[in-house]
Image 1 (tube, one colour):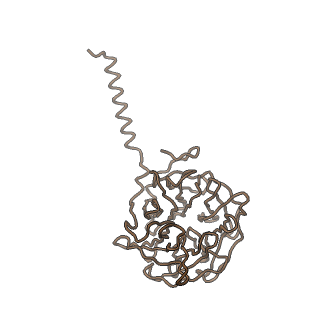
Image 2: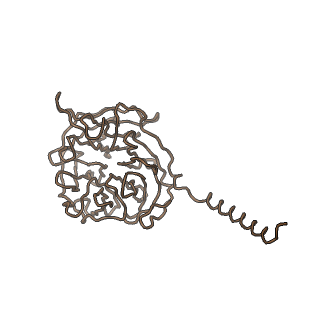
Image 3: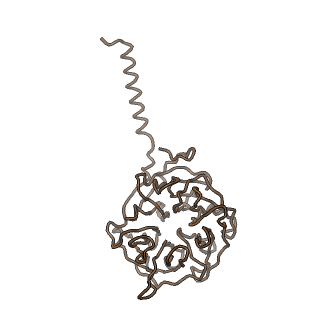
Length: 356
């Protein structure tokens, strides 16, 4: 016969288990903010891909990336796909590095940008390596269906080096840029007339303390912030209060960076979204964090957690308020993920650890 005390204990234990299960099921699920995941293509005439970019233009999405045998090979070109109402179109090579019948260079790091007026812009780099490449620009008046001939940017200008520009109140396009021929150095470029004339700041760093490249710009209204890839294991930031003409001394943030590309976007509600690898080594996991001031960041969504390379994200917010990000998926495909910012569940990043 079971003793009364044991029976009471078992009932209490069962009730606790039930309450715990109910509590677990009632907890908000951070991954519920992801409303769509897909590959932009499943088959392609190139072996590897990298460095995707995405933009909203003419009511649809346009994505681009570089693809070829392998990064740095001469057959690497810029490929474009469009997404209207019937899914992503078949990738089309839109730019290449052919110089003449005997000489072809690889292409690198496309950046798509749709100004408030004028054609869709496609910036990209051509050259044997990042130390010796140059910037080129193509335009499209029909949302990426057809493209102009390439124009080469003036010597010493590369345009946005990996991440999208922002458009300032006066129409000036501020481009986050960097160079690698004299150490890793970040600078800013701007054009008041959509690429017809160019201006540049001096380098924000000289490589003696921090080696940084590939900045992304966030706009908080009265101040701009850039976040940069670095060789020092941390994302590096700098601030401007004069529309990007001058910047504070770059400094490390508390966010890790395994020497890999990042991207960020300022949302319509004033918050900032950052997509990056929250690790000091490797290119997994890939994460999305949110901040209201650019200083304190909170964990939102883990986009990828399995072993592999998930890297070089691009992120935008479309007119319907949704967040779209694309990124390299194991160098084989470009993945597209859609996130509803209203469903984001924010949690603290304690002692540098992404919450489980």
